[in-house]
Image (cartoon, rainbow, N blue to C red; front, side):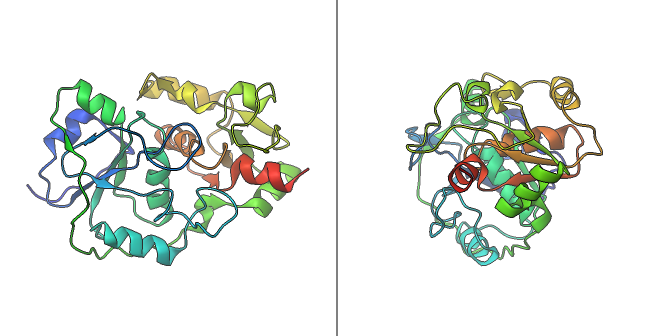
Length: 275
């Protein structure tokens, strides 16, 4: 098959199955544990020809004090090349939870100026539900790719950016944590991390965009965002450690919002740095 260009941020299992033999297709398994902790989920199968995207190590700055810290342009480039990713690769990212960590990887590629990327709606669960074949997980043996990252700083926000945005109310800060965590009714899962909320932020739990393991309809997603932000407003997405904030970024992208960014350190950083 010829090379493909992915025009939407979400693709279906049916679409992926029909494009499996595309010349430039790269399928990434971005699964991590849903409960906080290192390592990946326990599924022993993968979508055929998937490559494991090591979100916790190869694609995070492990020298940073907070988890899942966005890597440097150089680190991302080298790690992507090691996976056999090229500048013309059409990338589909999935995870074993449905849509959880896959959105983070989608956003990372966009922040490294690679837009030919999408999330598999429903992930591995939806693929299996559709009756498509899987294979045992295998080590990546792809040839070295030529991918070259070009960091777009406007897509990522850091502590000082969010501190200014919070105090000046220049952005809508949208928190993807559960309502109970957002309102300090439930303890944070990370040991020693205080409960709380970034001042002047609003809450949209990422699971509100899901119906089980798949996204709710596009119109329903648009309605969720319309209740909290106008199209022209700037939005910063936050969560616990920068993972599920990207599910909201995915929903906002689907809904046509353009001025959006993700707070990399999210509440893990803010809760540690602000008493």
